[in-house]
Length: 95
Image 1 (cartoon, rainbow, N blue to C red):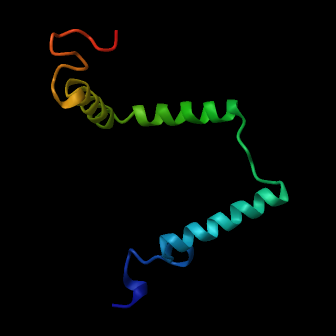
Image 2 (image 1 turned 90 degrees about the horizontal axis):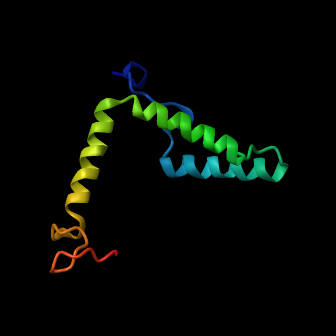
């Protein structure tokens, strides 16, 4: 079997070591900023991008259930002693 017979062959940039890819991408980003034509997000653009990303992620019900379960486990195991920030008399230490 030759390299061209494989379905998972990578060519060009994709075939490079991830560190080499990062180095090349970083050089491109620096050059773009130096020339002054790099896009810099405004706070409004960043907010919109975050909203869209959150909407996309929330469509995956299995993923949302998993992160909810992890959050619940963490809140019930806060401090690893089960009393969630209370002193030995049960008083909330955060008050």
